[in-house]
Length: 92
Length: 138
Length: 181
Image (cartoon, rainbow over all chains, first blue to last red; front, side):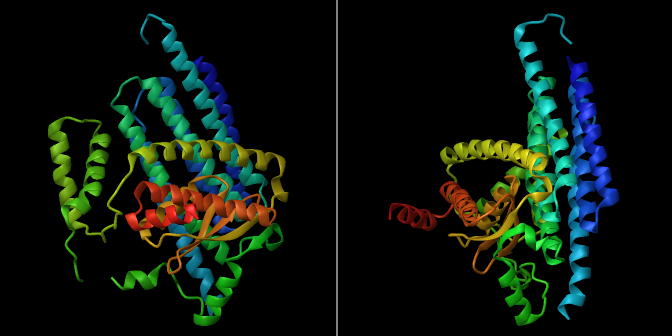
């Protein structure tokens, strides 16, 4: 049964990753791309999680926590940068 | 892993299998939302939120599969980290998106922030408020 | 820099949380590890000083458990709703930015309400006005004034739940008075 689950989730996650990558490529603005790469990171985390659950090991648990924290730091930084750069011409 | 197959084991396996599939579906929901929604703000709804449920289900399935008690605290900590960080990054990106006009006004039925922003912009330029005024006071 | 001394009681939740994180990351709950974790927690809290979070001084576990379950149910329902919207409505979805004035003026409660609101799919905090404690919430699929009123009511209900869990006594009695009248 676990093999079946692995196949199904692999297909679903691949489709999801494909969608996120399309949005990264197409995204009209920087924020869209950041958002999509955040989703891509979450999909990587989900894949790590499923791998651990199916194969019953915990080697990647810290990697999972680290990945989610890196995604957070990355998107916050970029959001800050975008807000700063665009506001100045409009405010003056 | 263990040779004897009692029914409890298969039930746990089935529950975790369902959780894993639904958790993966949540990632797919995020991708579908990213592709189909019209502007940044609606995309954010689809992108960040289903992941909360998705990761919860996947971690739950992992905890069920491991069958040891000491993994649960780690899983709970991982999920709580996500609970704490997702709203913050969503708020930061959403705020930046709103301020840089990344939304289509024709798709909003009401915008009660617009007037406030206009008023504030008229009063003091477009100042960098981050609660900045309040943290300075400390 | 005026450093207000924080009492140990005020700091305790932070320290306990740090110890739990430490032990969970090591996956080792032996007394020795907990003690070492506590030592590091105190050291970290002293070295990297943060403004203290002003807690309400009470925490109602009896209210917190149903609130947590209710929150989880809402997240599940709303996740599927967003999935449905993405598939069915797609580009034609209508949303709105709604101002939600909150009852409480404490930072902790405003933050907690904003967090819970943002975690439930379909609503997103765009801006916070701290001086009037108003949240500006972007709601998906808010087509008319009724939907907006419903969203406002939902957020205020969330806040009421949080006040019942950890608001101060004054806030709680104000809430009860408001609900009675």
